[in-house]
Amino acid sequence: MSRLAQTHGLTDIQQEILSTVRDFVDKEIIPVATELEHRDEYPTQIVEGLKELGLFGLMIPEEYGGLGESLLTYALCVEEIARGWMSVSGIINTHFIVAYMLKQHGTQEQREHFLPRMATGEVRGAFSMSEPALGSDVSAISTKGVKVGDEYALTGQKMWLTNGGSSTLVAVLCRTDEGHPEGTAPHKSMTTFLVEKEPGFGEVRPGLTIPGKIEKMGYKGVDTTEMILDGLRIPANRVLGGTTGRGFYQMMDGVEVGRVNVAARGCGVAQRAFELGVSYAQQRHTFGKPIAQHQAIQFKLAEMATKVEAAHAMMVNAARKKDSGERNDLEAGMAKYLASEYCKEVVEDAFRIHGGYGFSKEYEIERLYREAPMLLIGEGTAEIQKMIIGRRLLEEYRFQG
Image (cartoon, rainbow, N blue to C red):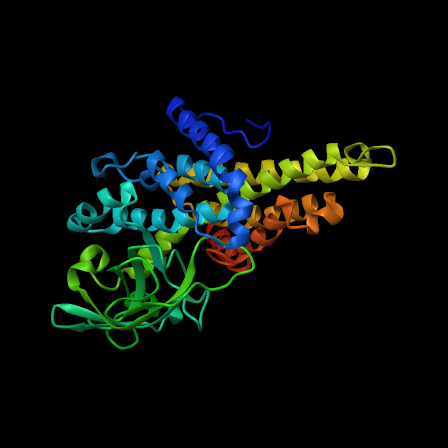
């Protein structure tokens, strides 16, 4: 266990879970991550190992076969996994968000039907908000769900669907106008549909097509796709929570915990970059001594370590606040913003410490350098986080004039 990013006040069970996950990362992920990433290969064996560890059910209640753990435990596990390979944490994250949304907002029938199989990893979740013409402007969603008898017909195009090919259950945000008078605020006419499908690419069920993987700069291994809905029929009992018009709130609740996850990923990647940088600095010699003995490199290491520590503390605080039942959008936004920005900076400093070798695919830092930018835009851009933070601060510090 490293000196940095320690978490005080953990139970024996939490410490045991984290120790097990860290051991798995060191033995099963780090040795193969760069090779798999360069081939853009889905980490099947790693995913099977995570199933055996019970990580797909980490926050699913025990009554549904999960471990019933807290958001903090989950976030600390994600931090460890991202330290090994960030793409693996992405495979778990969308699954976790859908399970969380089902637990918080699903009907009893929906929870009983999906959660036990999600806990084992038999059913794998993904969620879908983005569309080709919009990113952060969720209120501009155009994919529609139209009532046809006791079913809904879904039509539209979705974008940036993480686990689009490998998932078997997708929570899809659509616009549904029935029961909403003209002039209703856009976010009040959205509904989350629970769409079951076969894994794979192409037409995976009538009216639902998952084209091939989107080629990406980094964040490889995990499949990121589009999703095309063409009159896809969904029964009314697969409206999340059983009531239309609640989709925006349900998705935002899921994204809020997802932002803690992204902060945890940033912490994990930054930790790994620091480990690589501090190790290389003691092995590489220039001017007759290890570069770690040059003050310029020591300054970099000092800044990197401080950023790792600060980001971890904010992430832990955001998770603990949510676990206590309090609103945490301010803390989650701050943690996600800081951790992703610091991750980029720590990775770049580690890259600079490696000098020319950092540009070589033989060195792990090259992979991290391509992965870090995803955190600046995933689960809401840095600019969106600052908007959320600013608005919440103005609520908290309203001028009493």
